[in-house]
Amino acid sequence: MKPILETIQPTPGTSFFLSHGLYGATEPFWHLHPEYEIVYIKNGSSEQHVGSHYTRYTDGTLLMIGPNIPHANMGNYDYDNNIAVVIQMSKTFLEERISAFSELNYIKNLLQRAQHGIQFSTKFKKNIETRIESIASLPPDERLLELISVISLMARTHEYELLNANAINYEQHSNSYNRVKQITAFVARNYHRTIQLSEIASICGLTETSFSRFFKKITGKPFITFLNEYRIQKACSLLTDKHSNIAEIMYQCGFNEAAHFTRVFKKTTGYSPREYRNNLLKSPKLNIELGE
Image 1: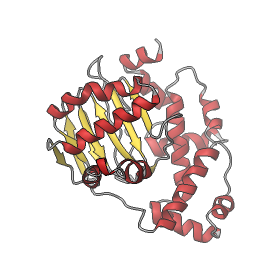
Image 2: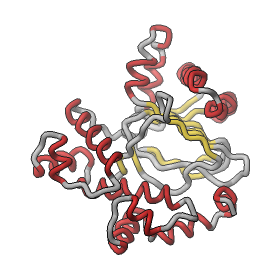
Image 3: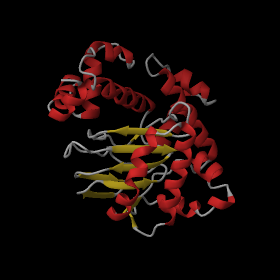
Image 4: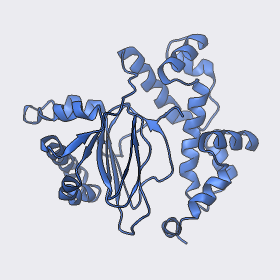
């Protein structure tokens, strides 16, 4: 399965995206994005699929994943006290702003290692887990400083192993990268409505034929496939609300026909929308989260 190109926006009021939850995203979602990512799972066991690297962690995990390395979501329901933290940072944020300070220049070596995927030791994870878990509770300025401190500790430790995950690089030419950024940003703003191929092609300054050829070369899939996968990603998120109406979700995500929505949803996830929601609700702990 080809990875979905994910569009990430910084958390409002901050320079990076931060997610803090009880269990993590346990539904498989094979994706990539141009941001660096830190993944922290407090405890429990689950599969860990990063690029060409596939293992199973048994007591949580702490990873740093470089740009454009495809990976699956991680998390588990093994323990009530589990915590999952995901931090995603743009290349500009890390490579041009943070590591530009002479005092933090040593972070560049960490960023180079992240191109292979890094898994930190259980001992190191436990040593800094309190700091990672508390980041979300801090005010924005302290959150930034604490993140820099955590990254500094990651850069200095020798308690890690490289996953040697093969990165997918679609940034070989800056013009191509800028076009991909334009496309993903446009889709993020307009996925809920009909998008004509001529419309998206004109944004990139290309004819429809040239755009289609370019997009498939860069992402490995036609634009309509990418658009539908993006919409299904949004639908999956909305389906976690057990009180939401599936038909309303369909329209919110840019689909106008139930049969087409179900067909695309099943092709992407392996389930119909109703089956997907029912599988989510089967977990007693998820039911607790959802308010049952």
